[in-house]
Amino acid sequence: MRILFLGNNWLGWQVLNWLRSRQEEIVGLVIHPAQRRKYGEEMLTCAGLESALIFDGATLEQDRTVEAIRALKPDLGLSVLFGYILKPEVLNLFPLGCINLHLAWLPYNRGAYPDVWSILEGTPAGVTLHYMDGGIDTGDIIARQEVQVEPVDTGRSLYSKLERTGLELFRERWPRIRSRQGQRVPQDKTEGTYHAVRDVGKIDEIDLHRSYSAKELIDLMRARTFPPHRGAYFWHRGKRVYVRLELLYEDQLEAKESSGRIHRD
Image (cartoon, rainbow, N blue to C red):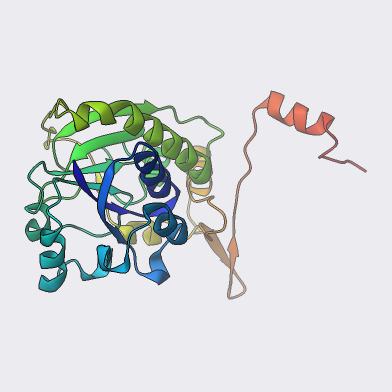
């Protein structure tokens, strides 16, 4: 199976590395431009491809990029945390379709920042392997795995759990996909949620003059706790004051205290 891999971030690197360890045929790599790239050097090293077989994701709408990918005769496209929408001209290049690994329990949290919205809106969290179509995370589902959102989770800790679960799900399901036995279950498009990248900018400011329930405020602050990203803030004397939360179960706190990492005068 000839695979065109489109990826970014730690999970993209890990899936690519796993495929290479199994000697799968990666005929081309599409990555983010340098300013948006995460774990890009690791992915480039892992892929081991000549420069002519590496493509900038920002150029996928250009005819010359589409034709260069077509010349590779890929059977399958595989997208992992790839941040560009694939147009029909690209999706149609793959006889076996294009599969995406999305860190959400579809149909909930299509789009961006699924970890944030699972905490804020109480929607199911999880990971989904699905075929890509003309919409955003709306294609037929291959497999899903739910992830528990705990009261001590922040956006960062939940995202890490989603990444690890996504890698496990991909490893478990890949043999079926490769043997063309993967199921396709259409999504129920009458339910679910969607959020764009810009939506988090609308929630980050904490208004000190409005009323929040304790749960609303804690959920907002923990959902947006994702160092090194800035997250939630409030204004004080013309300056933004950023807020991060640390949440611990009682036994975790006791263990931390007993280890000497917390000191009292």
